[in-house]
Image 1 (spheres, rainbow, N blue to C red):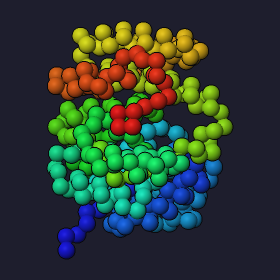
Image 2 (image 1 turned 180 degrees about the horizontal axis):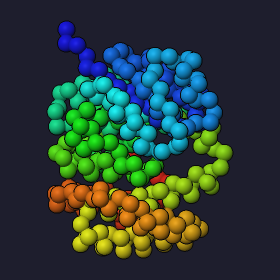
Image 3 (image 1 turned 90 degrees about the horizontal axis):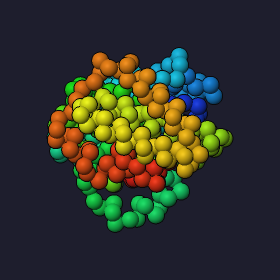
Length: 311
């Protein structure tokens, strides 16, 4: 019998103790048993770290002194020993055979760098799981960070997530680097992650949450372009984005949020100047002129809080 490769489950946690408990329980119910589990706690104040210590002593807990956003996953990557790494949010969990399906796909095709799992909202699970679209696998341009399986050699080649982005759009930036390094991203619809987006701390101040999402979506889009596209294309893109996002801000009564995000983006460009690495012309073309561009690089009136299922 061929030994199953070790899989690291890398979970990022912040102030969702009950959801984290559920996620860890579901992870250990997988039919794939050769796993190690890492929880990176981003300085939670709700007792999440203590819960992990007392209820899941087999889990490797990394406690951050402050909330560093998506860079917390990078701390998990540093400790990961697995040949493949499943990244999860504290409120997203795999169904029983998710890991096995994803690993089988990765082992069968060496050109795949990431499996983009099928992210399903909990209340819609039965409906989406029954869909005939679940039979389709296809190459995609990005993935959702609350459920993806990364090949270790990808991490060894291009590193982890861009820490300056903090939250949102890190998947797009990472996908650009993956594609540019010669790997593909493949959506695996039967590798299902259930995302409990109605968790308690998502409900207490929806305006604050929406404003934060708009801020980082606008800010980080500028930074992704700055990091990976030549100035000859960046200036044109910046103009289009400025026009589109300011229009969105006016229409949605979020103009101050959008302007603050733009100011923050240009300030951050100075900080990350040394990390600029242009992608190839073929990668630029794939992301600028495909269907992917419509929802991100150009303005449309649905911009804001909606994102296509497979991007």
